[in-house]
Image 1 (cartoon, helix red, strand yellow):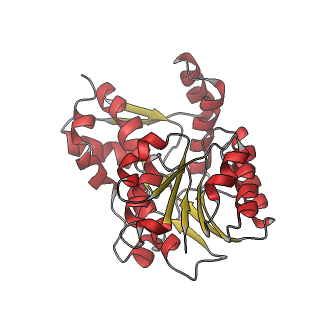
Image 2 (cartoon, helix red, strand yellow):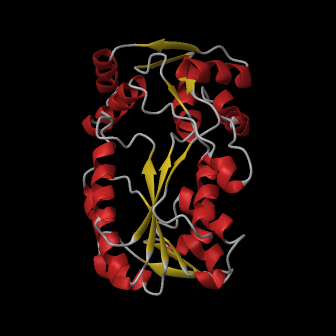
Image 3 (cartoon, helix red, strand yellow):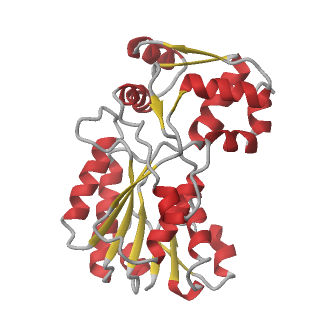
Length: 293
């Protein structure tokens, strides 16, 4: 079983690769990236590193050649990424790949207002029509986003303002998602399965600010505003339209309950419990506490 990991220079793919190499021989792993130089450490371990660009389908066919199972990590370019995913799926079929493991999203539901959901739904359709075995990893809300991006400036200001209200999300460590992916990629019986990968508890942003205050020793208040007010504040801060829409729709989706599902997937597939978000805060204590510098 040869495992192809696409977008291999990204954070999730690199973490997944390290877990995969604990279970599989380097000879059975193929890493694909536009930036092959970033994968030199894996090449030195004997892993095959190949060039592949989602916008150059012919490069993907060559990159996937000889692979049996493909780890397809969803891309970030809203709208355009459906075309990129289609290129990858078509190349996988042409290259003889038999099984695709796709990183979907916990909020994927036709009723969810999040602007990132339609691309995932369309990709699901393409995967389901491919004739290949598919496994969906519906990853939860990455804990790294609030801990490293949202909370540091909030700690600096002393307040976090958003539109999530008292809605909750089961924030999951990206590393836990990587461990689950590695288990699926290196073992059998996952074809046709969908796994919701979440953290151990559902927390709201008021909870997160309280935890950040505890970790940093600095007071952090929480304020929720309506969607229109939040959108206006983001616009005044110079946030681009597409990004602003994504951020506002995230809060709307949380309030509708699309992020609060808690599962035991991490424990069940990896044998260890999902880690709490405060563990990540402790890991990034300096970033949180020094955010005003």
